[in-house]
Length: 435
Image (cartoon, rainbow, N blue to C red; front, side, top):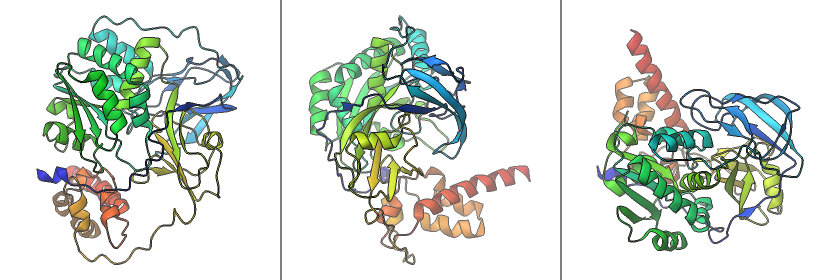
């Protein structure tokens, strides 16, 4: 399965990699969505006019795959209404006007953990979700009866520009070590693999100094190759295990957790403060003063950019995340989310989409794909809605990493076509099942 070694060499552009995170002052207001995770939105438990503080529970977990939401500032709830989110779904959003005091809620207290059940319950209450991807509720990953052979801490951070994980590994190594110790002791993890791409020497040295030589902890320096941080890819590159279609990492004995997620676990277990702020890389070719910013969740992006000096030119495109897998935002009042690791702003020239030309069947897209998907076969099968052809193409494995589009000399919209092909595959299967 050597195709897992494929990928692309993207420009690093890690201009903020040596800049420690700077904490923002309280924003004028926050707009906190009740859905910043995979699964059901949390249920609001506050009403307009309520006074809240930092760490006040404002929305309860709603079901097993869900996560509670806490206030990131102190102030007054001024609005609760539905909002269209970046994932295309609609969920309630809670707006809080700041009182400027950032008072901490009296309920914030250090959780008592003496066994696995205590740790799982603490993680459930923490509001922590995966901070490097889709926002899967973290407690669910560890609430398993299956053995965890390897906990893989993902410090790859392979997208251009983004350095929030890198500075977190350096600035918050004590939180990371504390979390590892608790998880290993009570969850029953056999081995910890701390995986970092080799282009992050400061993080590598910091982690080695803190954890090097420990029993059952391996610090693995990985080649710099996008998408090294993808879950299935990093599992293969650290353990040689393959997560097949329809399987989860735990099915091969692995749990993957982002390094910033681990840091938040350590912070919560030490302080009792739930997830209420996020380290965000603020960069792009028109940002005056690029930096890593610790911003309260729900902070409007316009205030985050203002904290970094504003723009040198009118932004043409602003992204949540990196240029490979990031999502374009419609306006600057959208908020920082739990899993916002970066916000990037680009000028018209920098954001210009190259004109696509005809496919020349060079196969560069398939050669770049880490999973060996053949977009050419998928596109042909999509035209005729050929179920067998779509399955043969491997499109089901597509994670929209963008390697195919990056490698394409014709600049075809391959990622978009792949998404349509993947959705069509699922529809054709459902149609066949009903027949």
